[in-house]
Image 1 (cartoon, helix red, strand yellow):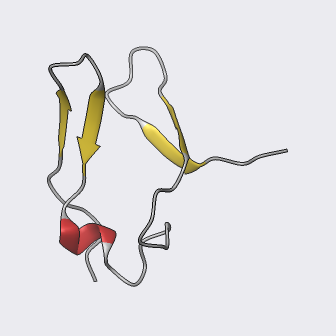
Image 2 (cartoon, helix red, strand yellow):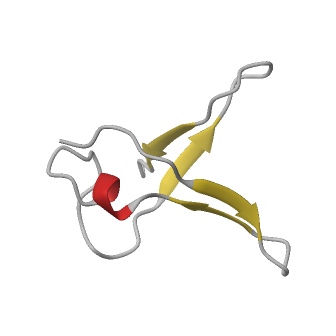
Length: 60
């Protein structure tokens, strides 16, 4: 089981930011997001904290 990995956050030339996750992490059977297609997510952070939170986007 892989519960953590080293990914990257970087800015593209067009100004968009991307987060890359290691393949072993994203394809682990316990990874919370399933599916091979695009998954919409909510990304948030707390001011002063060195973490981001990624959650599946919930539509109302």
